[in-house]
Length: 273
Image (tube, rainbow, N blue to C red; front, side, top):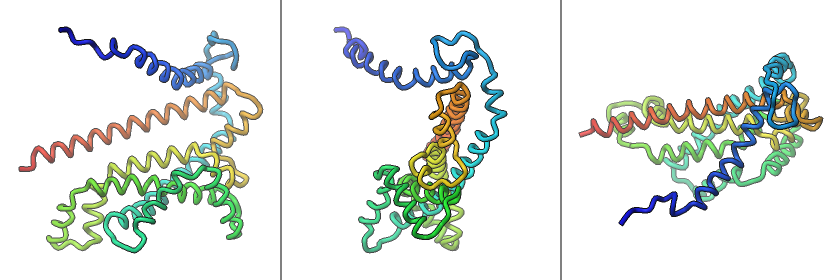
């Protein structure tokens, strides 16, 4: 008997998968092509390729001001979310306290709530606390809303960690604080990088929470959204292409770090008698 290949057994599944990938990635390809189109947006396929829209983009002051604002907010959100998320993950993994099960579920609440609800609730809190809306309130909003991402990722990393190293460190005379800095944190490196990249990406393209908490300054998503209300321009396609390139670069960096970390863990398992 001859074995039937999976492709022959499921031609409709293969066609369906191809259609899904085309639906997801063809618009991105078209966007990239139009960012090099001299005639602007309209008419397919693009016929006259140029870099003029990228030159215009690099000379656009408001766009780069919004990029710097988004980078500032995203970097601050990573630090705040990882700090508070690490404390929450340690509490869930290492401590027993009343209401722990409820706290574990509440940590996931920001992931479930719509961004509009989160943004509106944070806006009401800012008004109640008499805090003027600015990039600082956006930073606080992103940082607190994304704590759940850091907590879940770091908690998973703590669950996979071998506690024998920490116990050996304590037995050899190290203080709990020294053990935390020299053993626990290095073992959480991959989880922290993964959580940091995800938080950074989510913060960079966050619109709902930012819309409610922004002051006079704009972040990049709101700047793009404001310009899209006046029509799609190739300059918007150009900045979107650059964002896509940066996102791909971050994915490649994370993949290489993760592969290197998994390779080191496998080597340790092989060398362990």
